[in-house]
Image (cartoon, rainbow, N blue to C red; front, side, top):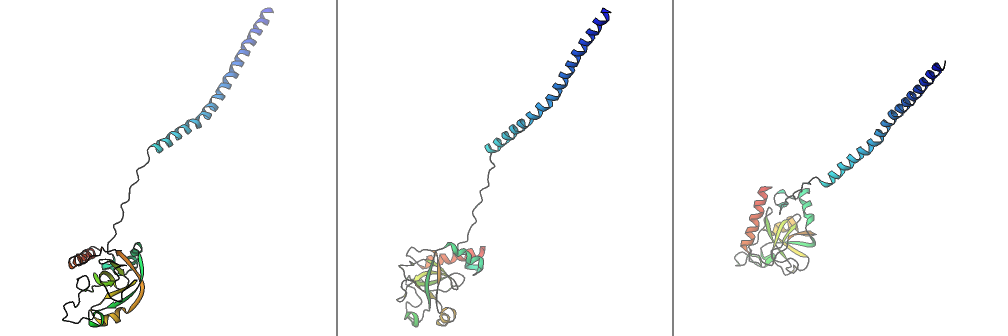
Length: 221
């Protein structure tokens, strides 16, 4: 009988030990996935932080846009289109009273045959060219010789002449005929645009060079 009791007690001891081991094993198995799951976001976050730093250290090179080349005299060939007139906004403007004159005695006191007939104050021969440069008169204290103006409705004018009545904000636009003065212009108050300010000098060579420049530019447009 004692042997049986001892045998039963031994078996119970072994069963208890086995049960404890089983419970511990199950507990360990259940804890490991939770630890791995908790560690995963940290790992992912570390990788993301590493990636962010990498981008910060190596920014992408930005391409530098080349400035668009602007025509010097865009209205020479295109005329007064909306797009061409918009380019005038970058130039200073002056409000003036613009009249017209012709080479005859009614404007200059000189008639055909006079040695100075059709010759401006600068020595340049007076010229009207709708698609290029025309000679105009101005107050040299405001617009020195060689100043290039754009006059809406008339075109590009180069200051090459003066007039006894042309003082302050007044300019005189050259026309080939007296009739053209009245038919095409008359007298207007308007804004003119200072394309280039002159240096106080103007001669036939400079005037011819300007007209060649504007003709070359007109061909490219």
